[in-house]
Length: 289
Image (cartoon, rainbow, N blue to C red; front, side, top):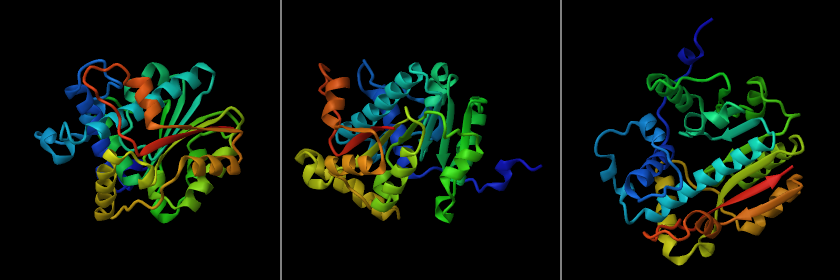
C-alpha cells in the first residue's frame, strides 16, 4: 500500500496560517515576560528564512495589538483544553488547524486526548513532512485529517473515518475560519457540532462588523480585509455578538457565551508595564452541548 503522503499534493500553508505562527513567536522574542503564550514551534515549522522580523506585517509597533490578540486567542484555547481534559473530555478537534502547535508544545495534556487536526490535504501533507523533519513526528494520539473542502468533501465523514467517536464528549475549536465561510455554512457547522454528545464544547472565533470595532483598530481590520481579498480568500461574514449567540442557540446548543477582546485583555494582559493589549475585532463564541 502506498504511503498516503505520496498521493497528496504538498502545498505550503496559506499566508494567514504563517502570519499567526510568526506573531506567536514574535510575542516571545519581542515582548517582555510574562508571555501570554510560549510558542516558537510554529516559527520552526513555518521556516520563513532570515529577515522574517523585517516583514511589514511583523512591524513591532504597528501590529502590536494584532500580535497580542493572536497570543490571547491561543492562550484562551489552551486554557479551555486543559480545563476540559481535567473534566474527563478525551477528544479535541481543530477545524482549519493550519500551523497549530498544541500537540507539540503540550504533550503532557495532548497525550491524554485524541487530537484530530482537520485541514486541506496539501498544507497538511506539508506540515506532516515538516514535523518529521524537525523530529516531532506524529504520536499515536494525534490524527491529521485531510479534507478537501474545495471538492466538497464532508469533514464530518472524514473525521469519523479517522476514529472520532461522536457519542463521546469533545472539544471542537475553530479559530480564524468563520470569516471565510458564508453564514449558511457556519450555521450548518454549528448544527453538526451541536449534535455531539452532551458535555461537548465549541470555541469559534468570529469577526465583528466594522462599526463594533474600537475606532483605533479599524484600520487594521480594513487592511486585513483588503489583504484577504487580494489573496483570493475574501472575508465573507461578520457577526455581532448577539447574532452569533442566536445562531448557536438555534443550532441546538444548551448554553452559549460571548468572550470579547476586552475580556482577554483583562484576563491575560492586566498590569503589564509595556501596555501591550489585544486589538478588538475578533471575539469568541463558547457553546456547550
